[in-house]
Length: 470
Image (cartoon, rainbow, N blue to C red; front, side, top):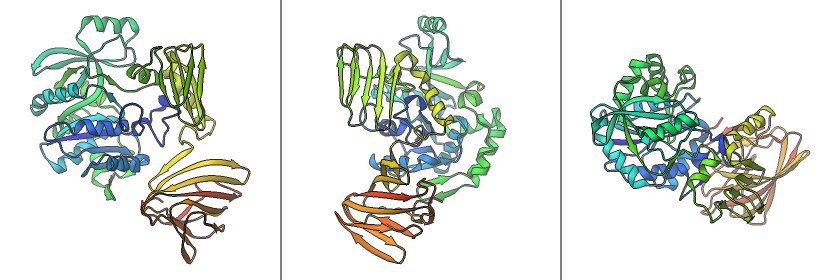
């Protein structure tokens, strides 16, 4: 059985302010139809005899992954949750253990969830070419044929052919300088390291046990003491925290004698920065990539994205990145796109929240948008999915007023349960045990006005929650 394994634990800090910790780039629609995560899933469905995917995701993103699988119509997927980040080698080991429960001979197609592939046909052809080598016990990686001297990627040097367009890996090479990258391009025997793999699940664990036995033992212990929860496989947090942090390249691929590479040209991008997105996207006659409400005068080779109601207008500029969201605007030179991460680091160091949350925050039951805030008050727009419910909860420091804009709300307030419809409202006193539920078939939208001495999201005591949150 060929089982796609989707690695979706990244944070995408270089695509701030659109990508943030609670809604990273793999769950965003940045190019093409659907999110990068959904596009990755869709590519795997074109392969023959493919099984339901295994998704390895961060604990924080479990409902994003589940919702986007549901939207994509994918059934039978397993979502394995990483309680703490431990890099790709342990994450793939978790997926391999899960795959072996389905099929002792399972083949794992390991794909990062945040890559863009423009030529799906060439990609699927490369996977088919890799199958014989993987079945013969090779650990196959996919090398992207370079079309420019790129210094932002690692490289793979090919050795002799082992058949079916597969080559033994001679060497994995770190990110080169410009002159070295140019020499690799001219040599012709080097490919970009894509981070995509195909191998037997059992073979990967065998190699991991040979080259990183402590890691494999710790992963096995964490997986064995895990448990099922709703649609998720929860790995024991304390046990997984003891797993060494390392990538598959360092832990296995650079040490094994059975590494193979399939070169492929498939319009691939890891979308590692705004400049990478500009490079991979469509441009107007002036070389600009534009999305949303934008106006340009004498502007060339720039990326402009407006994600709110405000127009972005540029005059007499070249090679810029301008990205606007409801609560942040980024202006950067395209050549400095990798340094956007430094802005995120500054936000973290100053105790701000814009690196973690958008103004619109997604929850398993829906979303909320913080419209206005001041001393002792906050106004939110809340949207609850049909048949979804917030937790039964109370607050120590705030009271709330709810006004229904559309849909029907079922309100629990202490010992009372009642319905509200459009233009009706209610008051939730400080300390009252309450719940909001949408019993209808259409989304429930309401305005919430909070007032009190402390309005933080951590002022919640949950008594009952269908989503298993504390």
